[in-house]
Structures are given as structure tokens and as C-alpha cells.
Image (cartoon, rainbow, N blue to C red):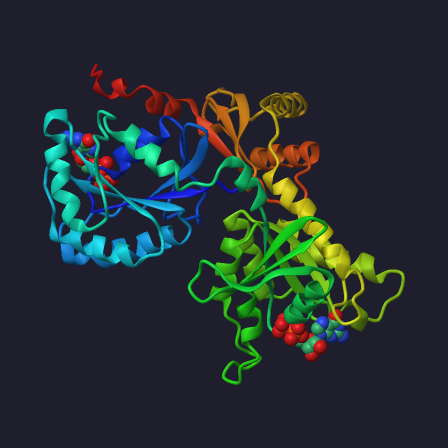
Length: 453
Ligand code: GDP
Ligand code: GDP
């Protein structure tokens, strides 16, 4: 379920991360520690009264020269703002209004998002009102005096904040499955898109997406809503200045990033090419669900072995995508095109599915009974204490172990395959984090660092 997003904006050092910690409490962001996955923003779940939301801190940038950091902040903030329901602009009440605050305020006023102005570091209630009053000049309405460190003033701010957030009922209603159609030129993406438009009811067509020039098409079928992502990108190649050879892989990457489910379209006559593998790699890195659509199946000469052999070819070239279902279709004749969205529905469900901690630990117990974890040369054995699913989209499982270094790649693959076999998760990648005991102790007992000797 997509929760509304609250973006926190402001100069470095005004207290954004302190403020986010205050809002989100001990609800940790999921930090992806796999190589190749770069998250420039972290989302943390939070709630106030009956409203849930996610907080995104646009910071993480520290530059000492105002003029240098402004364009960067703006870029980060813009990305966060495009998806935010409301923004909180945080300023430093002890420092007073700065030139950078004015610039950010001017820019924020031009954006299409409601902005609440929070004046932080108003630690002393007696001075708070006066400190905050100075910020009326930014022209963003009432400045709320808060102290991220002490928590004072945040209640009033949050009361106001939630009036901008949809209620939980409304959130259910807007739920939609975001589908990206990607593939090399001429594999039949626009033909497929047209086939979808034929069998669905277009609700809004076309509407602008969050990426600058992306145009999405939103359609409905059997009560489900699908947002077909960046359909402009699919049609764009028809322009004369884009030859058939032109393949904007970055555009495809952006579409993948925004999707829940990616349709990776192949040309049956060409089979899996290197470019297809690149797209598949990216789907996995981004943790998106996927369906492999082998199009132009009508153009293949077939006998009773063809499909079997073709599946073997897919297994060889897409072995890392074994979890994705493949479907053989023809956009030209319409054959099996109807079934694509059924598979998309299943993949989207699996992508969001949550498995109980009890079930996960059953799988672990069973797995280690069959195949005990490796023992190091010093005779120390790897131990898995327990596991739990820490997030969805994609399903992410944290395993708490005595020492991650004791688990070889082989053993990790074995455990992953056990999860696959027992839990299914067809159509979605799964992530597994191996967490050592040491790292956990440090996280939960900050005092430890001061305990010398
Ligand atoms: P960010 O760069 O905007 O994320 O700022 P941080 O959250 O890292 O905070 C910058 C500094 O301001 C840190 O030293 C914080 O301890 C301090 N700070 C944050 N909130 C408050 C507050 O409410 N009062 C005071 N006095 N200091 C604060
Ligand atoms: P895109 O570049 O991926 O959007 O591909 P198009 O949808 O423009 O299709 C490229 C070419 O392949 C066109 O000439 C289509 O008529 C043809 N084509 C698309 N789907 C099929 C199919 O299922 N079978 C056959 N034989 N040709 C197809």
C-alpha cells in the first residue's frame, strides 16, 4: 500500500535528520547493503493519530559553501517533492533567516506542494515564539516553533500536517499496479501497449508521471488499476529523429525504477540478447517484480519441442531471472495477450506479500537440519538465530546470525533456494540480509562506545 510521502527540506545542519528521527521514532529505514544498489533517499514510516505516512529526508549533503550546495539540494528536493503530499521546510531558529533559506523559500513557493514551515532548535519555550516570528518574512505562512531534540512544538505541527494527508480509506482507493513495458526497439512494445488499451478501460490517458517528461497511461481491468509507465517513451521512437537503432537504456532504467512490475519484452526470433540481460540485471538491482514476455510467437516455426527448447534457452540466458514467469504471446494476433495482466496481478501480489516470522523460522530450521551451516577452520560454526521479513516490495528477509563471515556463498545460495522452494514468491526477487550479532549490539546500545576498557 503506497503511503503518502512527507518530504523534509532544508539547509544542512538545521536538524533534518534529528527531526526525522523524532517523527519516525525507532522505526528504522531499510538500508539496502547489497553492492550496486544506491539509494539516495531513505523512507521511514511514521504516523500521527490515525494517519500513516513516510518521511523522506532530502539531506545527506553537507557543503560549507552556500552557493555550492544550493543546486544540489534543489535537485534532491525536487525529486522528493514530485512524490510528496506535503513538504516540511525546516529552518534553524537559533541562526535566524539566512540567504539560503530565502532562496529555498522562493523556490518552494513555485512548487505545487503544500509547505509547512518548521523553525527548529527553539529549545527554550519562552523564546520560541519570538524566534519563530522572524520567519514570517519567508512568506510561507505560520512558522511553527519546534525543537527536534526535545520534541516540543511537534504536536501542533503534526496536527496541521495530517490535514494534508489522505485518510487510510482514500489510500486504499488509489492503489494501482505500476507496470513498465521495456525491451529493445522493435520487439513489439507499442503493439503490446495498444493491445492492452484494447482490452482495458482507459481511465486517464495520458497523464504526466513523476519523471519530468514521462507520460503514463492509467487503465482499469476487472477492478484493478494499472499505471502503464512512461508510455511516451514507448511511442517516442516513431519520431523521425529517433532511428530504429536508438535505444534509450536510461529511459528504460527510469521506467524500471518507478515500476512495481516490469514486462521485459523479447522478440522470439532474436532470443535473449546482451541488452535484455542488462535490463534484467537492473530489474533485480531495483528489486522489481517481472514477467518475461516472449513476443512474436506467431513468427516462429513450431513443432512439439519448440516451447520446451525455448524455455531451456531462457533458463540458460536468464538463469538469474528464474523466478520470473515467461509467457509466449503474439501482439499481432492477440494470442495470450489477455493472460499477461493476470500474471502481472500475481507478481504484484507476491511482491507485496508478507510472510510471518513463524513460517520463516520453520523454513530456517528445516533447512539447517538438512544441511548444517559451515564450520570455520577454528572449529566455530555458523549459527542462524532467527529470521524475519523486514519489508516488502521486494520481500526482504533479515537473518540474524552469530557471524555473517561464517556463511559461504554456497550456503547462502542454499538458504535462498530453500526460501524460494518453501515460500514461493513467484514473479518477484527476494533479498536476504545476513546480520551479525556484533553490529546489532552496537546499534542498540550506544553507551557501549563510551565504555573504555
Ligand atoms: P541535518 O544536516 O539538517 O540533517 O541536521 P542534523 O539533524 O544532523 O542536526 C545538525 C545539528 O543540529 C546537530 O548537532 C543536532 O544535534 C543539532 N540539532 C538538531 N535539532 C536540534 C534542536 O532541536 N535543538 C538544538 N539545540 N540542536 C539541534
Ligand atoms: P517497439 O519498437 O518495441 O514498440 O515495437 P513495435 O510495436 O513498433 O513493433 C515493431 C514491429 O514488429 C512492427 O512492424 C510490428 O508490426 C511487429 N510486431 C509487433 N508484435 C508482433 C507480433 O506479435 N508478431 C509479429 N509477427 N510481428 C509483430
